[in-house]
Amino acid sequence: MNKPISPLDPTVLKAYNTGVKDGIQMNKKVFAEEFAKLLSNLDTVPGIGEKTALKIADYFMQQFEK
Image 1 (cartoon, helix red, strand yellow):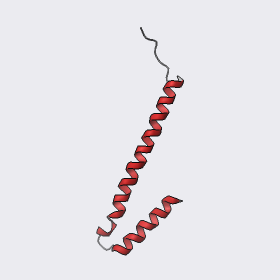
Image 2 (cartoon, rainbow, N blue to C red):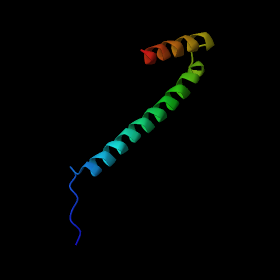
Image 3 (cartoon, rainbow, N blue to C red):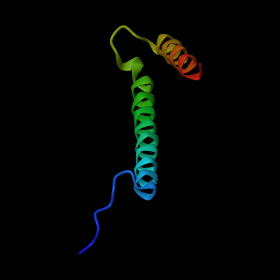
Image 4 (cartoon, rainbow, N blue to C red):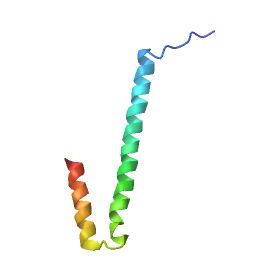
């Protein structure tokens, strides 16, 4: 019979933390891609032209850089 592994075992904690870190990175990438897609389609919104869409996109990109 195998001895149960404690969730506080360093190997388990390391694997858990690695999984969480990788999940966060993947979510950031997916979010950034979706946000970029939304920004690139701003000029399709009624009342927003190409120049305004560029200004809005530039504003949000500056906020993310801060």
